[in-house]
Amino acid sequence: MLRMRFMPVLIVTLIALAGIGFAACGDDDSTSPTETADGSTPAPRPTIVFSGDTEPKERITRPDRGGRIATLEIAEAVDAGSHSSVVFTFLPLVPDYNIHYVDEPIACGSGEPLNIEGTSFLQVRFTPALAHDDLGETTFSVPDDFSANLPAISEIQQSCDFEGELTFVFGLDEQADFKVGYLTEPLTKVEMIVVDVKNP
Image (cartoon, rainbow, N blue to C red; front, top):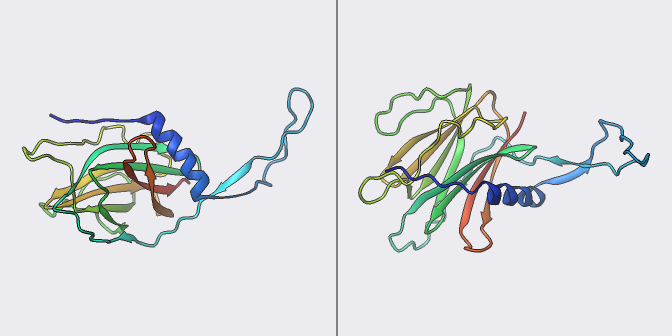
C-alpha cells in the first residue's frame, strides 16, 4: 500500500521562514511606488536575492548511526517566490546527500535512461536512505502533480531506491542555481532536507 502524507500549511510556513534566514534582502528599484487608497506611498518591498549556485553540494558525515537507515516519509513541493523548494522528511534521522547536475538521468537498477521532462537534470541522492519498508511496501510515492506548480522544475522522478541509495531527478528547462539546507519541525523536532532551485 502506498503511503503519501503532506503538510502543506506547515511546509509553506517553514519555507517562508527559511527564506528569511537563507536569503539576503535588497531594495527593488525596478518599479516605482504605487499610491495606496488613502493617497500615501507604501514603503518599498524588499526583494529576495537567491544565493545558490550550480556547483555540486555534498554532506558526508558517516556518524555512528547504530545501523539505522533514513526512511522517506513525507515530501512536498512549494513555489516560494524567488525559488522552488522541494522538502524531504526522513525518519528516524536525516541521511547524507549528494546533489549535482547530470548529463543523462538513468534508473539505478537497469541503467536505462529515464524519460524526464526538461533539458537539464539535477540529481538528488540520499544515503543511507530508502523509501520502502521491510515488506517492500513503498513509504512514499511521487504524485503526478508533484512538480506541476513549480516555476523552476518541470518534473520530478524517483530514479533509485536500492541498497541504501535513494535518488530523485529534477527536470529543468535550463540549468539554474540551487542550494540545500535544513528545516526543523518545531513540535516534533524532526529535521527536513530542503532543496531550493532558483525560479526563472
